[in-house]
Image (cartoon, rainbow, N blue to C red; front, side, top):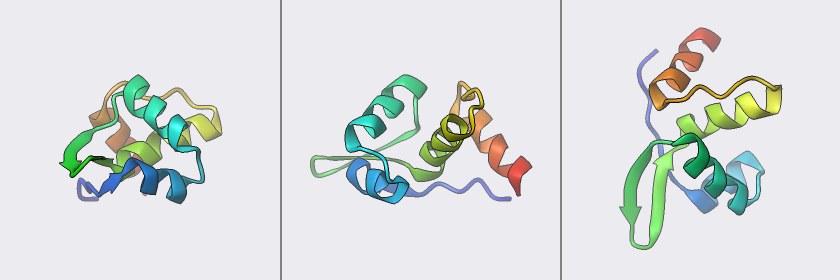
Amino acid sequence: MANLIEPIALADAAERLDTPRSTIGVWVHRYGVRRLGTQGRRTLVDYWDLAAVEWCLRTGRAVPATPAERAELRTVAA
């Protein structure tokens, strides 16, 4: 599986993951979700990195410490 990176704004990620925007912001900070830059005043993050954090929390797994370790979860799940 390729190392997919999908830029997404925090508000859009919150909608897609059906999670409050404030929670998404906490996850980005707490788990060091890969930040990809800004677009105007909107912060862009890697959606798949954020989705891996959400999946770990939802399923009761420990969240891997780095984006690279979280990317490994995608290759195992595929």
